[in-house]
Length: 154
Length: 157
Image 1 (cartoon, rainbow over the protein chains, first blue to last red):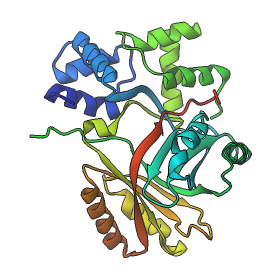
Image 2: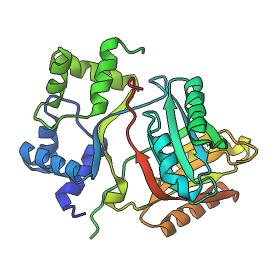
Image 3: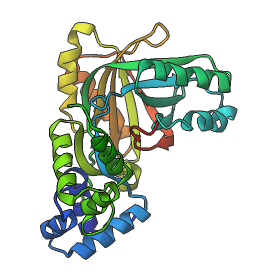
């Protein structure tokens, strides 16, 4: 992925300091010393290249009344795609990773109540026939930060 | 603060993404039949209430060089958790930090997610955290594949 110096500065800015005002791209343009049109073109390209996954509101799920949990399941190697398809079909399951452990499939669930979380887990068990799912709701939250310092490599 | 029906619709518009046009909030406001000014005033209120952290871009971090990530799971005595959590959160490499319930088959009760440019870098960060907290019961679970990563669509599930 070729990112030039301006791409990197733009990426650092839009991760955390996106202006909330009538012409936000104009404000970014002034900070970078380029035109609004160029900011829009660069953002469009960075989205097409899938460097930017989404540009939008970042919400505190707890304040929106959602409960979060982390779950893990032991999936045989030859069933990974099939089980992932079942798990990934839920809107509230936003992250799913394979990890190097006997519990190899790790996914997060966001739902409006613990009962909804239980319902999703029950359905996954029924659809996959896998009974052993560990459910690890969060008890205390210390940090969530999703900004990455996109430094120049040189 | 409880969200009105209009606020919920504003949240739904903001989560589906900001249009790349000169006046993006005006474009979203028009869809809801309100003015840009009203829309921005509600966005500020929703942010001030802490419901929205910010507007920002979510990156595919492997595309900007952070190719390794590890979930480090820890066994930390209950009475030390708050202190350790506050310490570990300070490190910029730690992107997520949570206390979670433990289970008989899974004794870990504390989680830090770290992102690095290599597995080796993740391992060094884990050692640094362990030393900082004086805790030795931990293990790293490296990510092998990303099967899904999306942003939550609130009020649509």
